[in-house]
Each structure stands twice: as structure tokens, then as C-alpha cells.
Image (cartoon, rainbow, N blue to C red):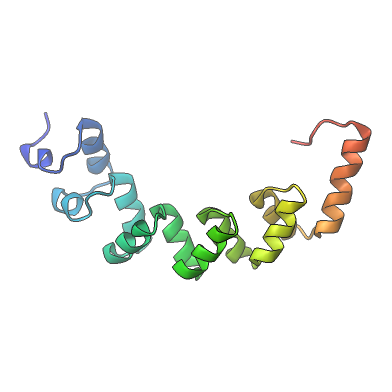
Length: 147
């Protein structure tokens, strides 16, 4: 049986169970509304203040990406520049973390690489030129894609 105080949050039984599981209080859930318990827990765990959470959410950024963006120093204005280039928030913060510019990410994308793969290749020391050559060798051989 759910204590009556939880009913004031507007959460269904599953949401209430999540909130309790994340050790949130009724007051926290009400204060952070309309965020879901998982988002509230994530934001609090990573030190994202409520005002910042609302600001990022108001820009359409999920809280998990807002936390990561702030951790790597990505601003909302920078995020909008990435979005204007056709990238999403997770591409933007991961590229910033890796030290990759929009122009570099665009070049990799134009060569047929998705951003997460391109960033991993860059972290492993690949250049765009060598990655394209390696990919094309496999394509010419008719080899199945590597897993």
C-alpha cells in the first residue's frame, strides 16, 4: 500500500516505486516536477542544480546529456551550434570531451562514419584518411562488417 502523501506527486505506482527506490522524498519529487524519478536521481547524483536542470530541459536537452555536457564544459550555445550542424546532444558532449570540433565531426560523418564510432577511432589514434582506407579494403574484399 502506498502512503497517501505519494499520491500528491502525480506518479503512478511504478513511478512511486522508482522514487522510493532512488531514496527520493515526496517533497523532492514535487519540487523537481515534471522530471521523472530517474532523472531527478541522476541530476542530484551528479550535482546538477534544479535551476540548471530546468534551463537545459527548456532547451530540449535530456538531463543525462545536460549532466555530461556540463562536465566537459559544453555550453548551451555550443550545443546549439552542434545541433545546427545536424548533431545531437550526446554527439556534442562526447566530441567536446574528445577534443573534436564540429568541422572534424562533419568530415567523419560525410565519410560515412557515425559520431560515436568516429570518436572511438580518434581516441585509438586513427586519422580519417586511414579509417577510410581500412574500411574500403574490407568493402573491396567483400568482407562482412567487423563487430
